[in-house]
Amino acid sequence: MKAAIVLEPGKLTVRDVAEPQIGDYDALCELLYGATCSGTDTHLIKGHFPWPIKYPTVLGHESVGRVVKVGPKVRHFKIGDLVTRVGTTPPDSSLNVTWGGFTQLGIAKDHWAMKRDGLPASQWSGYRINQVVPPGIDPIAATMIITLRETWSYTTRLGVKSGSTVLIVGSGGNGLAFAVHARNLGAARVVAVGSAAREAEFRAAGVHDYIDYHGDNLSTRIAAVQPDGFQFIIDAVGKTGLVDSVLPNLAAHGTVAIYGIDDYHNCSINPNLARGTFTLYRGGYDEEEAHEAITAQLRGGAIDAKLWFGDAAPYPLERIADAFDAVAKRRHIKAVIKLNA
Image (cartoon, rainbow, N blue to C red; front, side, top):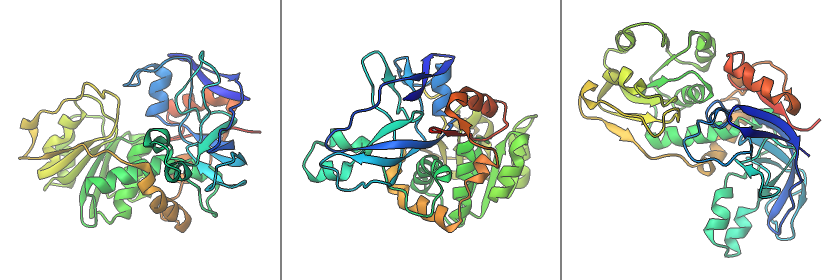
């Protein structure tokens, strides 16, 4: 089968690898579509991922697959189910897998059955991300579930709710997801800071104001639209100095959250730039807890995956490098990869 492999930093290719073998609790899935991630995937391709990675590695963590075969102890997946976050397993010791979703076949584990049968949590807890997609959600749209679950869990744990004021820094896929969630949670004021090229998408998502991050006096320009400051600032990029540039716009006793990973191990905050005491959020997220909320919003129309994908046709797996290049050149916020012909 074909798989997208990062041979070493800067070298992405598509090659044949061995098909995964299923175990007792495994469901073999035909991978249908995957979405590019400018955070995880791009950092892996460039060699800038904040945690150690062994290359070569099979890329992809936003793929969905259709169940084609199940192991003898599988009780919660059936043939034909659409499943989130499916990835392949390492075919041999020479090839690593970093989730491995950009391939043609993958494995989902019946973590519910594994838990109930008494297997240690270390064997199944990491597979709670394998969830069944309910009927009525297009497989292409379903690739957005991964980003949306992560950011919804993060946003709700952060405490954003009806009446909140929220500043989002970053205009990539995650920044747009935070904007959509804040509006769907009933935030009274949502302002985004990012590239001028992304204003239309963020306006469509319902932000009240959009500010180009280029130019001088960023915090002054933000203050002009929200003089009282924001209860929440979400940094969806994670570059050193980015929070400092907007920290004067945080209301006293507000909360800052750094979600992006660009400078994960080197981020710093100068608290003297703040208006007063503030909280740094470190509560993380849990994809599983957000699955039902996100699939309900997709089915009900509260979230439209076309905000991220537009009307662009999916790229075939063989052209995955072109997809990432198009995202880097801002032709797409996210691109869809068709994993099987």
